[in-house]
Amino acid sequence: MLVMKFGGSSLASGEALIRVAGLARKQAHRRPIVVVSAIGQTTDILAHASELAIGGQVEEAQQRVAAIRDILEKTAGAVLVDASLLAGMLASSVDEMSQLLCDLSVATTHERHSVIDSLLSHGERMSSLVMTWLLQQQGSNAVHVDAREVLVTDDRFTEASPLYGPTNDRLRELVLPLCDAARIVVLGGFIGRTLDGRASTLGRGGSDLTASVVGAGVDAEEIQIWTDVDGVMTADPAMVPEAKRLPTLSFTEASELAYFGGRVLHPSTVGPAVEKNIPVRVLNSLKSDTEGTLIVAENQLPTLTVKSIVHKEGISVIDIRSTRMLMSHGFLAAIFKVFDRLETVVDVVSTSEISVSLTIDRAERLQELVAELRGIAEVSSTGGQAIVCLVGDAIRDSPGIAAAAFAALGTINVRMVSQGSSRTNLTLVVDEQDVHAAVTGLHRAFFDDVDPALFA
Ligand code: ASP
Ligand code: MG
Image 1 (cartoon, protein in one colour):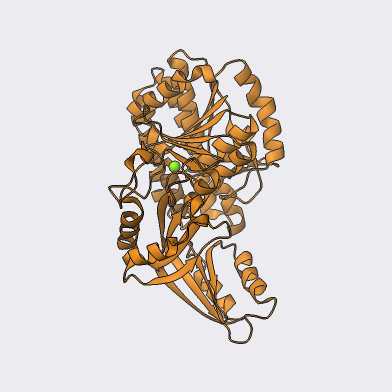
Image 2: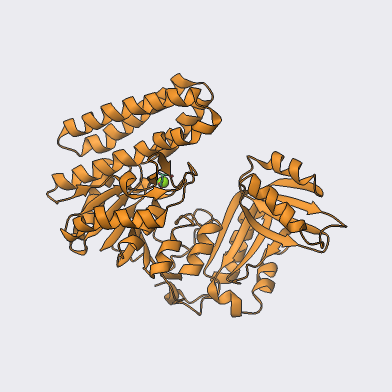
């Protein structure tokens, strides 16, 4: 069995839908489970519509639903021969989405998130039906499975986590028998339900996680993540045109890289795959004959010390100073309690005798955080920062990486430095204005002299 996940941009036109159906059929003998994201920008538009509705602009929000109908008509409408299938689905989905937007405009803050998830779920519900119909139209015995019947999650709406026990039970009951009957199973990524049956989603980009949860649950031989880039690259090719495709990566490297800004994989994708030791392959749906990047347990390229330089902008740094308290026990705990209470994830931490600096990538609750932390210590914050992270398993055993990195950065001011306990990354925080120079300089230093055969 094989899991094949296709992202929204790989489904964004009639042509693209045909291409994806072809890729799935080509692997039919491996009994694929096809996991699809919402078509094109559907989720972005729905998320925007929900903000408009919450802000009371219900009419403007409804116009977004009309935009989604247009997208489906242009993409799916161009390839589905039986127009009545699409028309029927659109009629009921559009009705439901419109109603949900009205609900949202009057929902309490507490109710809001589960309504948002009901709304967002329409993207994947529609795309998965479209893909099933297209495969059936092409003569394959594809079957649609409603992902909400399978993916059971906790109730942290809009950022829910899978509950593995019940999800694996349902995979065994609902999906495995279909695979055994050699059907191509199609299901939507990203969406699920709580144990008590309310709609939930796994957070933006969460279809990757669906793919790996499903892959681990059915013991797939491989989890394929199909995107529109060649694989995982040595840097973001939009910033570094010379960036090269990495033929392989280890699970550890892939998680570090996804977490610190690699754009190809969702950070939680690797977890379920690691547990069952299932290879994850990142592939380009536009160039299906290229090999992509294979992610496995062991480091296959030990001579390449730094594998990739990733970056993440939009970071805020919070500096906390206290001459008296820092070294007293309980101080860090008190600080982290504030972050916990305000549900804010901390990415990078560095400390000195009298200060601790932390980065966060969501500024929404920055003011609240700072206000609460001021009750404990002196606090200041700076926005407009960027994380630049060198990732590679062999960094651990290679002296001189930090020296080489700092030499490459020249006069660029580095605000924070940190190396995780796994020592498979070196993380720097710089001003956003310097991120381009930092990434290109580091890429030059670590990749210009590498034997091109390693990337073959
Ligand atoms: N459609 C969802 C999103 O855009 C999930 C995904 O694409 O993975 O975030
Ligand atoms: Mg997406």
